[in-house]
Amino acid sequence: MFDHQSGYSGGGAKRPPFSHSLFGCPCCAEALPALLETGNIDLRRQADAFRSRPDFPIARFTAGECLLVNARVMTMDPNMSEADALLIRDGRVIRVGSAEEARSQATDDALVIDCQGRTLLPGFIEPHMHLVPIAVLHLYENVGPFRYPSVEGALQRLREVAAETALEENPDAWVVGRQFDPSLQAGPSVLTRQMLDTVSETLPVFVYNASLHLGYCNTRALEIAGITRDTPDPPGSRFERDSDGMPNGVLQGGGALGRVARHNAAMRAHDISRACLDVFAHANAVGFTTVCDQGTGLMQGAGELELYRALRDSNAMTCRFRYSLGDQRAEDWDRSSVKFGDGDSWLRAAGWKIVSDGSNQGLTGLQREPFLCADSRGIAYVEPEALKEKVATRLEQGWPVVVHANGDQAIDNVLEAFEAARAVGLDPASARCRIEHCSILHDEQIVRIRNLGLSPSFLIGHVYWWGQAFRDEIFGPEKAAKLDRAAACEAAGIRWTIHSDEPVTEMNPLRCIENAVTRTLWRDPDNLLAPDEAVPVEVAIRAMTRDAAWQCHSDHEVGSLEPGKLADFVILDADPRKVTATDIGKIRVLETWVGGVRVFQADDQEAI
Ligand SMILES: [Zn+2]
Ligand SMILES: [Zn+2]
Image (tube, rainbow, N blue to C red; front, side, top):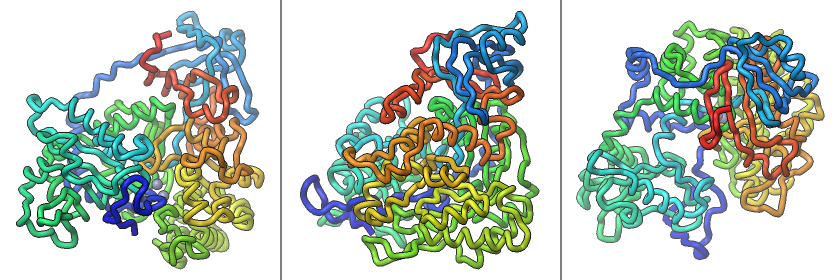
């Protein structure tokens, strides 16, 4: 493991080349439920409180009937048709085609909108994210490496947050940061209380390491928590200390973290329901109109489903939501009555999620051969026989089974489990069963995936953010080239998608599309990772629209703009096919519409 006492500072001692501590997927991050416990947050109680409120007065532009003309419409229908006008009524697409065709079906009441030649696409669909973990983490300031490449940059951001926090108005205010990862951020390898005192001496300051197993706080936070030289270490964890025995602000392990964090009164008051709506609003702002949670219940079991239902019933959701139940809470789900397909176009049960191994960057993904940098083949979270049993049981109950598998051995195990299921007459193909991340794929595994009719979803940010570490440190170039083989799956006729797995990487469809199209590397801009696996931009867009809808069992209602489907779409300020590939992620989303209602409009855009 990464020794954060190694004292790396800039160009000095050898810096760990990549993060061992970042969780590969919140499915397996046990620290997340602990985060809720620290704040004494009960999701079922929050759902009840949310239900007892009056309806949210959502001020948004509502369109009964709208005729959008002068648009460059990519319908993403099976023929990849293009059009220049879209007629919507009562939340659905009535006609997409030429202006003349669309106008012929419009009534006199239709509001005509001139799109000024802009690109209009079906709303993007995120097939794999984690709603409640994001909602909890969004309450804190993201000072991670993807936003702040250096520790000083992270500290500077926290200083700005502290300066914006008015202590007179809010005497209980804390400054809390998250995602700090010294293995990816240039500078010192820890944040001590002296460093965080430069953020504020009057406000308590607390920063979570990306792993959530480590934290850092300033002197004021230690004072509030009553932690002194004489305070013993909590069982199983540690207050790191200066040579004179005074805690230095570095908190190792859940016990030490909790001893400080539980004094943050604001955390106990956090409204997770509201935070979920904020996550949806954020999803709209980057162009999503449907998102899918992959691991419901991992934080607090069936309480999470109660929370989803309260959100649905509030009519305040601005993004459609799909979810897969987390197998780790199978007993809870078996006691409940939830079934595949339960719900409506806003909220629906879409799968059963099993986590078969860890993450490759965390060295816990299960491999055929040991990692290049460690004498280990990773971890099977579920043994092969148990996996066969789980897959068959849930398929038999009618659940589309979604299995997380990062390492090549994990993927072998998943393929064997599905082959065994098929041997007893079950059909993974018609259930649209998925392999999540599906990171390292050999040619013969691609053939087996095709033969089984399985569908992979790639965490495409693995290529961009960790590609260099996979190539140079974790796997070596030959195996790293087998990462996220979108083009090979495409050539084999397999349906596949791409996802962010937020909070692992941030939700952003255009960034995901750019990564799939370019295969560029964050820390090695002169090289690409397996450029043969790059796909054309239209194909990457299809992966984040029609095919993601299909994977989420929602292609009958979203994923393309066709008559009868829901009027979910985005308007972009540039055509992704017309810009330089490395600029796709910079294209701005100008408007996002869900069910014929404009739910997002870029700040500087005038209402058309
Ligand atoms: Zn996962
Ligand atoms: Zn995940």
